[in-house]
Length: 294
Image 1 (tube, one colour):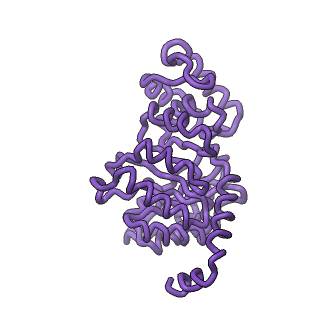
Image 2: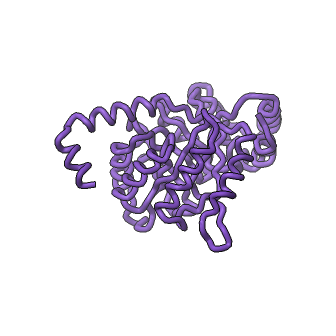
Image 3: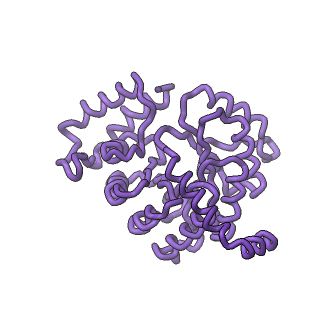
């Protein structure tokens, strides 16, 4: 690390060149689609079971997902060593079919550790880094602190960064004003929001519509409801592959919500969903998307 820092000091143009490269890749990466957050299998001795992981990956490859989320909450990353986290990503990259995107969790409690792990995840084959909010000192994690943290990570990351807000696990929701400010960073690609607040997701989509910023729903339970407040704004943040099952799902949504659940038109012809949509779409939308839907 000291040698790298010294070399960078002697090469002042490296940082600018690297950031230009990063930001160009961020602008090109389209996250629209379905990304299952995969689990990490373990042996009876509580070691990572890489053989079972590869077997699982062969099954995932038969389903037309856009890509995979690795080392998210389902991956139980807090219980893995740094070496295990990186090795899991390498294993997934080797088995992942060409053209599939790999979003790798690289969040840590400190900014320095997050920067270092993000670089390792990129070297292991991640197309984008999923960076969760640091939360141990959540009382001090205000917008200013979080903006500073994510900005430093994005400045240094060799791959685009996706913000990750999962308050059920961290006890901390990434503030709306912080998301809006961070959306202006050219190497921050979007947000995975697992809070389930459809009104908040709609506000984020609305307030970042002038940015190349993509919003991903973090759970199938509110996937379709999130599509209602995001996909209609021509941002393509939540767009599973088109096909018969998708059309059936959308027909079910429109029939169930056309009169009862939608409020008046707000911005740009888009509709906002009332809280009732969460319950309705949990039943109608996800069954099509999780049963081999196109």
